[in-house]
Image 1 (cartoon, one colour):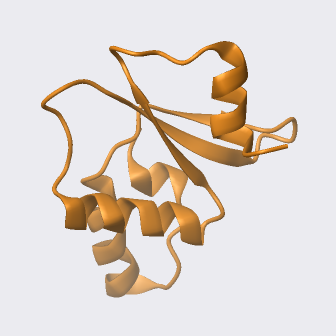
Image 2 (tube, rainbow, N blue to C red):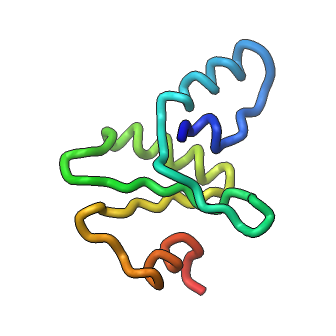
Length: 93
């Protein structure tokens, strides 16, 4: 799923189009929504040897954070248990 589909893009015209194009280059594997279908977390399932450079990863994280969306990274070789997934997505309760 494209980051542009997850994060609202402010502005109008050319500037908005450019920002949308930049966000479209980044992906998340899926999103988690609350009961009202508001996105609360974006999830990336990572495998070894995969990933963006640190600066690009920070950009993605900041975009999601500015939209109030938590970025959760899950290692595909060490999948967490159900209670751990809840903590990662919802935060400490």
